[in-house]
Image (cartoon, rainbow, N blue to C red; front, top):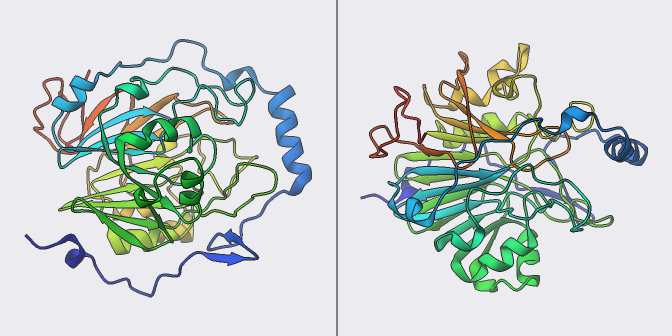
Length: 357
C-alpha cells in the first residue's frame, strides 16, 4: 500500500509558516482587539454581571464510558469527552485531542470557569494513548495535571510551536514531543498529522501573550480524513485547508464558546452552531464546508459564554454548504465514521454517523 505522504496533493500556492514579530506569533490576517479597557470590561461583566442563562438549568446528560467499552469499540470510533477533548480510535490505537479533566479551566483551583459535568470516564481509566494532539495553550485546552498524568501512558505529544516546550518543562520526555509550524506534518503509526492555521491567540498569564503558536489539525488515516479546528474564528484559511487536504470524512469544529461581543474574530459564534462557519455574500465561495464530503458527520462542541466545560456536542448529520441537520449528543456519545461499524447501539443512517444510545 502506498504511503500516505504520496497521496497528499501539492498546495495551490506555497503555504506560509506562522509569522513572528518580536517573539510573538500573529494570525494570517490582522485581528482587531478591543484593548486593555475592553478586556477589563469583559472580566468585570463575567464576574459581576453574568446572566443567569450562562449556566444550564437542568442536569446535562452524560453517558458513562469504561475502558472495556473503548477497547471493544471498532476502528474509526469517536468519543466526545467534553469541551475540546475528543478520543479517536484509529488503527486499533487511541488518540486524544486537547485533554482537559480539571474541575476549572484556570490557574487557580478556587476560581475560574467551572465545568458543567464530570467527564464520562476518569483520566486514570483511559487506555494507553498513541498520541495527544494539542491545538494551543489556553487553560481550557491544555490541562497541566492531565498532561502530567498522561505522560507515562502516551507515546507522543503533537503540539504547535512553543507548546511542546511547556510540556517538557512539566516533565514530559522531550523525545515524545513533536512541535510543528503551520503546514508542517508528521507521521505516527502510518497516520499523517498536519498542523494547519487557525485564527486565534495564546497565553497562560499576563505577559506571555502569543509567545506560543495555535493551530488546527488535519489527520489522514488511509482514505479517511479528519479536521480538528481547535479554537478559531472564521477566516479564509479554511478554503486553503480544504483545497489542500479535503474533503473531510469527520470535522471537529469549535463554536459558541463566547458571545459575539467579546471575541468575534477568534471564536466562531452563531445562533445556530451549524451556521457559525457558513459565511454569506462574497465570502460564500470560501465556505470550508464546501470541502466536506456530502453527508459528512460533524461533531461541534457548544458552550455557553465564557467557557463552561462540557455542555454537549452537536452532531451534524448533513453538514454541507447546502444545509445541515442537527441532533444533540451528550458527553460520552459513541460515534463512528463508518456505517455498519458493528456497534449494536447504532440506529442512525444514511450518513454513516452512528451514536450509541
